[in-house]
Amino acid sequence: SSDMLLVGNESGYVSLWHIASPLNNLEDITLVSENYHGSNASITATACSSNSTFVISGSQAGVLIIWRIEQGGLNKNATIDSGYFSPITSLSFRSDGLRIAACSEGDPTVKVWDMHGSMSREMCVDNVGVSAVAWSDDMRTLVTVPVNGTELVVWDAESSGKITRLTGHHKPVSCIDFVWIPTSPETVMCSLLTGCDDCLVRFWNFSGMVPG
Image (cartoon, rainbow, N blue to C red; front, side, top):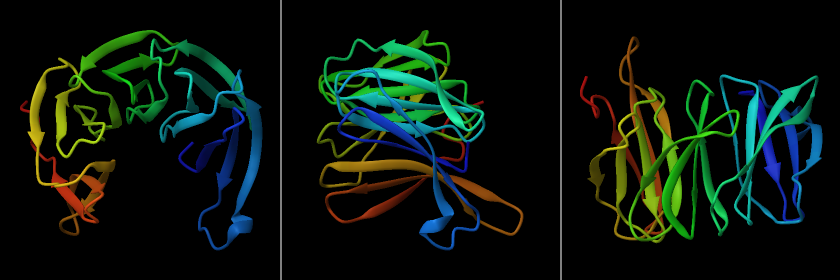
């Protein structure tokens, strides 16, 4: 589903869109399916897996739904009562498409589920909510951002142990994602891209962040 985009609205509906490659104009983005999330709570976060047929949506009520893309449409694979009592702020698939990490603005924990809706891991970030979470492409680390936080917390995805904190932003971090940056014709570097309210974008080198 790397060529798919999942969009949610404030009425509780999610819509799946196909993005043609190359993308030349708006006509190359077409609606595939539209589904009701299950309540009229606004959709506050979505994520698509690049290596599986799963996508996921999270609502203002803290409910997660894992969808499977089948025959050009969306079918519910699992509904998760996350235990969050505040809006889902961020969702991130592991690169193999078999795990999903979620966080909420009113809860200090990041939770990880499999595609059947079973929780496999939980990490307490701080005593505040979490505004963003991202999974590194090598599946070894998770990065989280506390609500209104200027620091990023790096976790070992297997042990749930805290590896380090990344400092450098002077205002709240608003978005994070992992990207691959070419360093030569034969090599690429795994980097974390962060943006914040200080109007700066930073790249962090993640090569060798986790021993082993």
